[in-house]
Image (cartoon, rainbow, N blue to C red; front, side, top):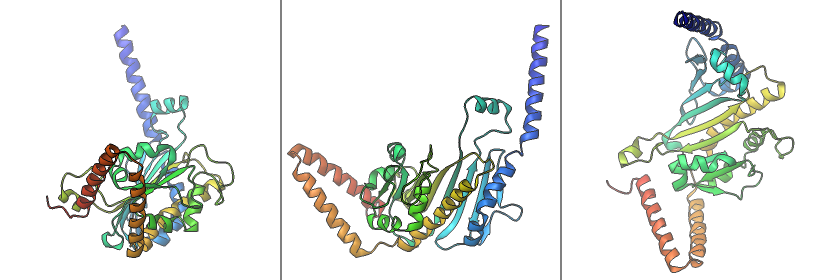
Length: 319
């Protein structure tokens, strides 16, 4: 009898779960639509085509939605991946979320850029508190990038900028709309004033022409697509206050402005590159002069290895 009652209880629980799933499987659709409608003007004015003939935003699962756009300068295509963290369709997960609330949704844009409209370099703006974690995951940033701490108006207390193209970084952060958006991502005005958000909306901006995994051959390098990835943490997709809606528009425009910056400033002037190389050599020589002979030898070995990697990246080593 006990086993029979247990089976009945499990069957009823399963029925309740399935009914809950069925009734709520579309619960996120109006919220995602509200997100898109809030930013539709930006997308429609910057891309020739969005989504497919049936929908601008495509439902992949009750929690996962895909946005696709194409037909724009500098860009092959853009994919947006919106993951609604709040599991409105899942009874068990909803109970867990009620006990341990989730305070954000996830939005990731992956943009494949045209190959020849910018030089090859790495560039990233990442949350300062996650820089070490991300740099360990991103071998290209760790190998080629250097943090920049000398950029005026940049929100250094919240973000770290890493690149091997300082001239490009200077151009990007001199754009007023980009600086405004970076400050807006932490809840402050363009002068850094106001009350910061508990968590920044912008997680990272990552530009690279390198594969995600460290390549073992030149062929792997040549197959890599020049990609711009921008990650956001969004507030739960509930009806937004006007200030939040405006912030989302500002951050959506940031995606467009970063794309344009790569296209407009991505060809690095030879004079600037030469000057940067001289500065790097001067700083390196000064640093080496302060080292002991053993420390200097280890540092020079490290520099040689790094140079080999750069040559591999540029295709100067035949494998």
